[in-house]
Image (cartoon, rainbow, N blue to C red):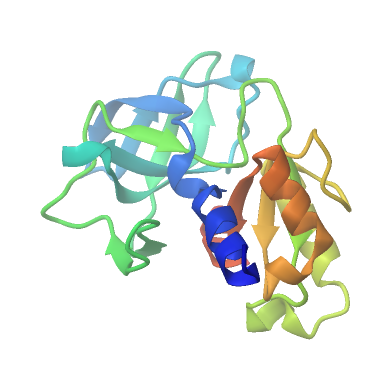
Length: 204
């Protein structure tokens, strides 16, 4: 099998952010107030300031992104979140960027939320792969990885320096396929997240 054919076969097997499962459901939404309430709280390990992507399933099983919310306050089992206006978000399937939420597509009760940075009472583990950061804010800074690691920890995650069986997510920078951790991540079936897609969750 030619090298190009092997690459195509590997790429077909990649698990991406589009495949991640919802963390919670929206119990109530008020677009006028700009707030939603989700069925997660402090007893689940939720943190104030954590961000979630809102989506719904549409025809064909596709996940349609509707907006971004941030945890404002919480009790034991429920959290109040603010809807972040004018959020630039990318459709994982088409690659097209949208400004959300859209007026004709309001966030409603029953919509789902997800983020790579939250699992109930568990800290997900991340690893960076690739040569250089894409974002110009980090590309030339010597402490880029340390700064992003701090932001990820604030969102509830951990960062390792290499891919192992305990890695949950691989964040891909420029030319990730040149990194030996890339192939390991494919073999382990680890979820890949493009660098551009993490900034909406951690505020670069």
